[in-house]
Length: 151
Image 1 (cartoon, helix red, strand yellow):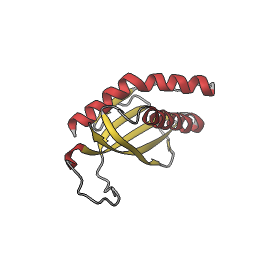
Image 2: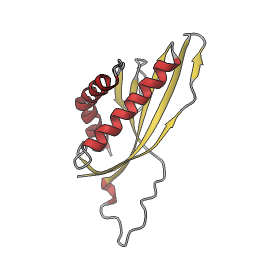
Image 3: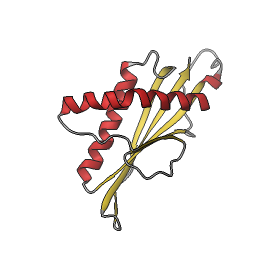
Image 4: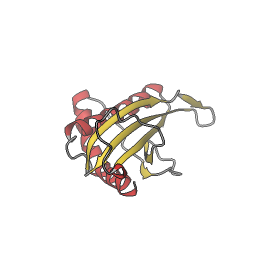
């Protein structure tokens, strides 16, 4: 699992900014760049931030006529993205653009995505938007479930 998380982080370090740039030009809007990308939970409060975590969700791999071969190569990963701003629209749109970029990267490179095959992006779950009274900012997060198999 550690190698899978490292590979995914390195892949996003190398490719996410380029995909965001493409989306910016297509949509004619500015997308804030990551303040922090980590494996595991981050204590750094630079936004937007993205964490790549092992996912403990129980996945259904469907029916198969044979046992899953080498199940240690199948990984469940959770991508957590969080943003804060004084504007609800900026927070919401930033999260949606990051989700869009992650989806497009997976679609564009599904055969060899970050050293994985059989990449499946699952549920996108947006948290309710919360107002930080002290900072006078809105904060929201989104989680994306990913299932993949290492090459």
